Length: 244
Image (cartoon, rainbow, N blue to C red; front, top):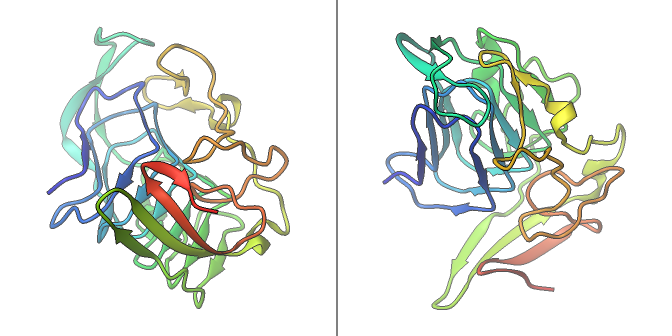
């Protein structure tokens, strides 16, 4: 019933370019008792519960969340964090919750990022879009909130391909430009005091989308699909090949 489950010691991992749907009664992504840094980028989460976050120090970048968010601290267990790129134990901590980064995501309906209003550790939030009643976190300075905008999400499954129908608006990039998400922007995960870098130690620069297409370097489009023109899209999301 669960899509992806990252239990303790997921430090340094990356979850990218996944299509997750119909994972019920559980969730698309469960991150359990991790301290970060870990990266979740360019994913499509379509189940009724998109994210179950019992961790801290995660970076969620350019995803589409169409289900609810569950946030839960875990104060009764202490789990390891590590030196960089190692499984040696540097220490043990419990999960207060927070110290997470949500940049340039799209949330459709449900509670959005409201569960992080009361996070114990600071949150880092910018460039997110909230549609169809999705609720921003009170700590995000300038979210795009369009309660009446219905993106018309529809997943069409055929024998050889899966198509996602979605409406997007190019005006989401108006106003203050969104940042290109990089290792420098993400800073340091608090508990291990380590930067967000790739498993091979290269710096992150999330400059391609779900399909591997280049993003607008000056003002990347929110969500997993780079779309300069907007409008109603029909995207071949599995195998990955956008329909024009």
